[in-house]
Length: 381
View 1 (tube, rainbow, N blue to C red):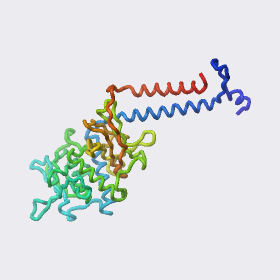
View 2: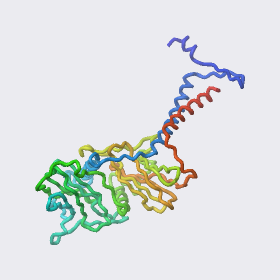
View 3: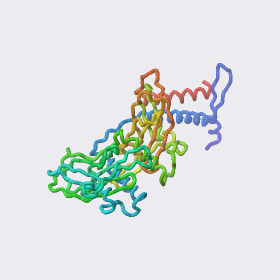
View 4: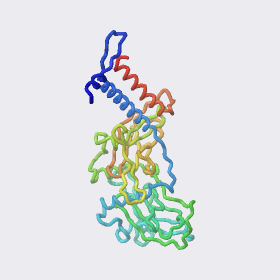
């Protein structure tokens, strides 16, 4: 750098007419100040925009939910149960084995878990409970075709008496079907493969496997099972993790202006947000938030939503704030890192129910306005 050039450009002078003084500011300092103000305002706007949840509608045919859940069952089976075997099969425990039967026309399949129809047989229990040590049920039944594709999957309700059952339509092009079930306490079990007697041709209207959420009456049992899992390795915690363990996994609630609706975002855009990495081919290890839910001041679950990783990069959900709610607290289950609890939010209805739809424009204007005003103030104009 030329010293004379640097000296000539090292400062600029402005006349402050009101004070009759001369102010000298190094141009690099002014640029640094401007950069700092723009960056801080940008992050504030980014957080505001992220809080406005966008609902992504995914067709079942395009959803990666079923292969993702299947891949996670395989991961959990190897880590927590069988060690080397990917799945338990018939002969391991009759009450855990899923049995598949077809209708006379071969168009409908029914899966039941257990052999209760046999002499001295037994159905798998469906025990709903708020007690983590008591809850015991088949959480999901799924069925795969000859190419190992999940063609049907259902989240089950433990308040419905045994046997755990799923009925589904047989998709076109399928030649064989193999049933599976996941027991919350004992892992993944596989039934015998059934051959389709008269396979139909592929029809685009045939059902595809998409997201399956737990029924409202199952929410307490699902929460109890999360608490049970939280106490076990690798989490080893009697309580949910909180933001002191990291903002990335923490579910934050944002109330809308009218106080009647709210949204959840897992993570903090100013720090880190949780990924939603599915497994479209069922081979890659997934990492996503499987469920988010909210409790009020009495500990009642007011919403629970099962999340699909398809086409999204953040774990978000929207819900209606129930009447009488005074406080709300969000929970999130990460398939790899356990149960997380967000901060308590007080429910206070705003006097104005109006909301702005042009938040992006407002933020853009805000960045420019704050930066310009701040720089002018800094240099004394």
